[in-house]
Amino acid sequence: MLAEELYGRFPQADEGDLSRLLHGLVRLETLAKIANDLGVAQRLRFDRRPVGSGLHASPSDSMLADAMEAVFGAIFLDTSYEAAKKAILHVYAPLIEKLDASAIEKDPKTQLQEALHAKKLRLPEYRVISAQHATQSNLFEVECVIAQKGLATKGTGTSRQRAEQEAARVMLQQLEK
Image (cartoon, rainbow, N blue to C red; front, side):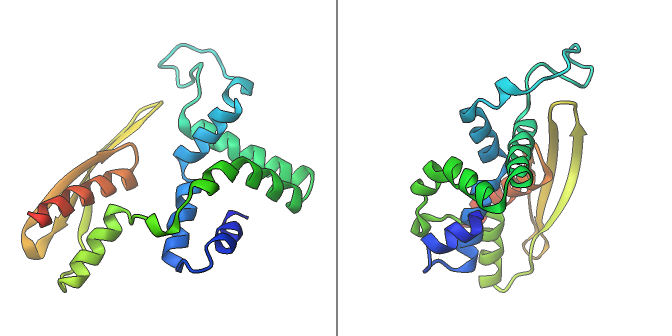
């Protein structure tokens, strides 16, 4: 639905640009923001066990994103594809209106890959150094290694992907020096 909308709005954009636009719209943080804006959190029921028991009185971004996806799925299952499409596009309209296909920035991992390719170097290797799994949040530490250059950087994030992006961002800065 969103991919179809983006394709129609940005017919000159290439597949990579459309993919990055779509990713920005369906990522966890965006779905959580939409859920917050719609007041979904206030309509969810939670087990009120003490903190540390595994369940909390307020939802995480992940829970909000899941709830928003469930709402969209329920609309589809209870009505039709067209009704779900209409609801989704209505909710996403303010975000879609702000999109500018010419201002799409590639993520750090993609930028690093392209920079290394241009220099005829092998792709970096990403290694998980540590992973801490907590009830409400995870913390990953990842190392980005470019063996041919003898370079290594570290990044942290709440997911492996975010930690890899951070390590790639630091590596790009190091390569620019």
